[in-house]
Every structure is written in C-alpha cells, then in structure tokens.
Image 1 (spheres, rainbow, N blue to C red):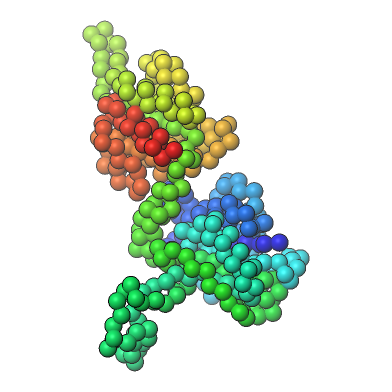
Image 2 (image 1 turned 180 degrees about the vertical axis):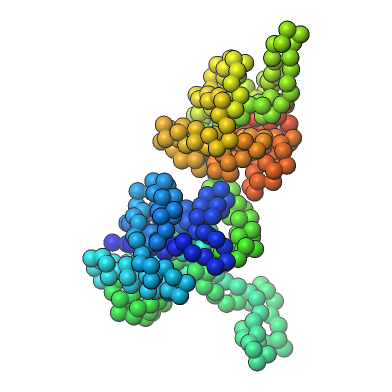
Length: 384
C-alpha cells in the first residue's frame, strides 16, 4: 500500500494559519491534497493535524482518499520535528514494513499528481531505500571562509555549460515504513533524487514567498490545468450582461440594456456542452425574461455577497462537479468571493479596481453590456 502523509498544524510563526490561508483562491493545503487525490500511485492520504478548523475545511474538500489523523499536542508544538509526528502516526497504525510512505508538505503547493506518480515509479524502478525531490540551481555558492563551493572563479563556466547543484525543494519524500521506523528519519540508505521543475523551488515560509508562489502557480499550473475542464459558465447581470446603467421610463418603468453578442456567446457554450447560469443580487422580471431568452440552465436572483459562492457550490453539487470546473464573470465587490474561488474568473474592462486586482483574473477588453460575456465565452472555447 502507498500511504501519503501531510502534516499541518494550527500554529505558524511567520504566517498565521498558513495552511488554510487562501492561495490562488483555495486553502493552501488543498493543492497538495489535490495532487495526492489525483495520483494513481497513492492509495490513501492522511492529513495529520491538531486543528478543528483545518479538519472542517479539509472535510469540505470531499476527497475520497483523504482521512484525518489527530496528531498529539506535543507533536504539534513549535519544537516538534516532522519525524516525530511521522513516527507517532506510524506507531498508531498497523502498516506492513514494505508499505511506501510518502511525506508531502502543504507548503509546496506546486507539486502535481504526475510528480507524485513519476517519483513513486522512479523509487520502485531504482530500488532505492528513499527518495527526495529536488530542483536544479545554477547559482554560484561560496562558504563562510570566502571559498567557492561549486565552481572555479578562475575558470567561470557559461550557464549553458554549468550543471549546477541539486537543491531540496521540500515537496516530497518517499521511504518504506520499515526504514522510517528503523532509522527514525525520512531519508536513509540508498537515496534517489526526483528532479522537479525549477519554479517549484519556493516554499511558503514568509509573506514575500506567498506573493511569488501565487504568481508562479498561476503561470505554470493553473493556466495549464484550466484547459478543457470548464463544465459550467456563470455570470452576474448588472455591469456584466448589462452596461450597469439604470434606465427609467416616464411612468417609472425600469429598463436594462443587454447585448446580443453575449447571447450568442452563451449559445456557443451550450452547443459545446457547457451549462450556463446567472447569479445576481437583482430580482426583476427583466432578468427572468432575459434568462428565458438565453435558455440558461440556472437562474438565481436576489443573491447577495457570500451567497453567490454558496449558490455556485449548490449548482456544482447538482452537476457533480467542483468549483475548479466553473468559469465566472463579475464586476463588483459582491462578486469577489466567487471570482476568487472558481477555476477561471474574468471581469469586464470597466469592473471596479478591487475586482481587476484579483490575482489571475482574466481582464477582458470589452465593457459590461458591450460584449464582455461573449469575449469570455470565446476565451473558454479557445481553451477547449
């Protein structure tokens, strides 16, 4: 059996509640658990924690492989080692000595399911006693005695001719249960190295690390992961399907301006098998009539702020999908939480600044009510 183990705790000196702080719209621990959940080389995943809030959040992921292990208070302190909680966990279970034990760090969110599977295959094929993940760095290092460590400065190599050094990135360690119990260490004996992409070198220990890692995540992981995965397209109304204008007749009649190109965009999505829906804080017959004309699958009116996210979750449950398979376009503060939680988010060019500043959001060239929804629909189709 291949057992994955992810230790997380409440306390964190540098970043408060780091393990559940939102990272690219999801709790940090989500990303490593998702990689393990999606790896065919992992049979079961144990999340070791001392925190009720973390337990609840992880339970809400509904990952079938993930189980919660209640680590002791002593092994959740600032002075406890990772090895101590590993040994505590192993001693509490009836594993065989030959079971594989995969230690995965929540602070390395850029690890992917294929990394886990490839590392397990390498460990098995090389018949190693343990394995760790590294990245290759081509920086030049010096020691405290002012001596170069990895190059001769009298014969400085060109970067393309320099093999560099392998540096631990802390993402994954593999060993057998027997080796860990005997050596009381994550590594022992003959060690294999699985080399990961250089952008995975960063670990989330400081606030600056967080900003850099989110940018890398959007560039190298989320952007690629988006392709062909969108199954539901949701939109706001005012400022998105409309131009945000408020139009009234002489007798008090209310009007809204919609755009025919947006309607065609939703039609294109329908034909591609992507379901559509409208979630809006407004509650008018105008929107009901427009929704019927557009033949959207879902219409929710009178929804405010956090309610939009809950409605999206409700739809996902009905469709048997995750928020990562949802695209949403919105323009103002009451859309923010949902925009930060879906797989792909977008905003019209005239959206409010705090929406345009959401990390990773697709900033469209058209204004709301002027074809922005169609532009986003075309963007989704290009990904597919």
